[in-house]
Length: 385
Ligand SMILES: *Cc1c(COP(=O)(O)O)cnc(C)c1O
Image (cartoon, rainbow, N blue to C red):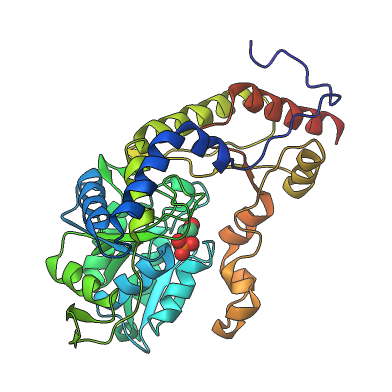
């Protein structure tokens, strides 16, 4: 019945892509208390809040270790370094990802290599990965794979782990968009040598600033990460390796501890929002996102494939609905990465997806009426355009 009310286009209902203020207001009491606690203690880096958050996040993911760092990009960068990736190495990832995946590879001194994606999950296509590795003669330089659990849908970790093992490659999971997502009942980030998360404010679990974390079951990697994030020190003023400064500060850790307790609940709401969308878009030409059997999608983004997607995006915007496009330009099309020498025709699936994708608003505080309004507006678009 929800879809029966007409969206005549006369009432303009503003729907943002995300609404972080609404979320804060719902948990204000606890957040304010956590912030005060840190200010009163007067310890701002590498303190108790971080240790507790690391313990709690590792526990949540069922990983042995977690090491908090300054951002998701740094989580990836330091994880690569901790896995032994160095100057001149090559790292495989996908061309349709947030650019930080590639920034991190460059920061480690390595060069990114792209493999095309699966058209339904938008994650690395294991068949293409394997045939690429089979053909390559200069495998020696290829040291690692970064699968990206894009939009919150897990990559095919079973196949990827098998292939990585076969070719002796490290796996560093880019789980920035997938806190809480699962593959065969296990949390993403626990399949590879390291799992990297971003707590950028808009992520499913977001800080109030920059923050990130790496999880691992490998003690050596965890120990090395703890040195890398803190100038390369194991003991104060003793620098056994060359390091960086990339720490998850106490204020963010305290905030994230409050929000971690709600992550499952928020993810559940995202999933039910996705179901409402799927249902209401059933009779439109729009292709809704899938959830592969054996996976748990956490809908960081709700990405549809649509005819005239860009025109639809503009139409929605005119009606007050802010849809997005993740991402409008593939990495190989970016000026900064022209040096890699890739052509659009090297990645036909990515190229085709980019033409049709559109991210509709999804966040826990979104109202069902708003979803109804959005779907109705989409319906009107296809009737009129
Ligand atoms: C957000 C994001 C990152 C980077 O995280 P930051 O915390 O902004 O550095 C990396 N990869 C993907 C896929 C992301 O979405």
